[in-house]
Image 1 (cartoon, rainbow, N blue to C red):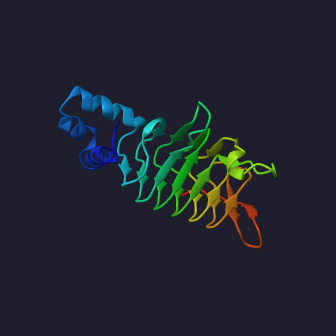
Image 2: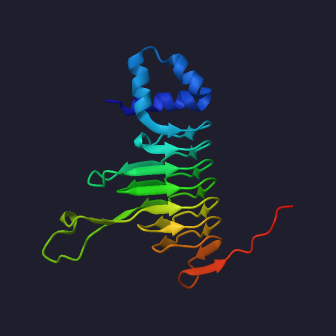
Length: 202
């Protein structure tokens, strides 16, 4: 069993010295085997601050992933057999964000998240009046977040949501429906969705 202290030590070495630094400090085949068990796949230039449960064979990180302190990933123990989180290249999570996965969550390349973003691909059932909510099970549906999106602080993304590429989700939005590419979502006078007028940088 890998303890958190061991994981934090390996991540700290990886952040400062890369995978070569990690392998140079591993003293036995047993330690290397434990390292292989931490993450399914990760690209280069990974940066993970001290976090909770951001490792496992059900997680894939792309190149240049960065998370700040307080980032947490959790898998619901009652979830589906295919539970998996795939994070693309160049993704950034600011402080105290969390992902809770029951089935499937996918995040595209170069998407960034403000502080305190919450992502849930499931919800409690609650329609049985004679059964406690905690015992009614869950509904669930995959979440897909596109490439090059900016998700503002305190956004909550709920089950079944697909966010297209090049979207901006304003701070404080609770998103419970899918958004097409190139959309700006804010909470002014309720949820408001407008098209972004993109232009070339040149």
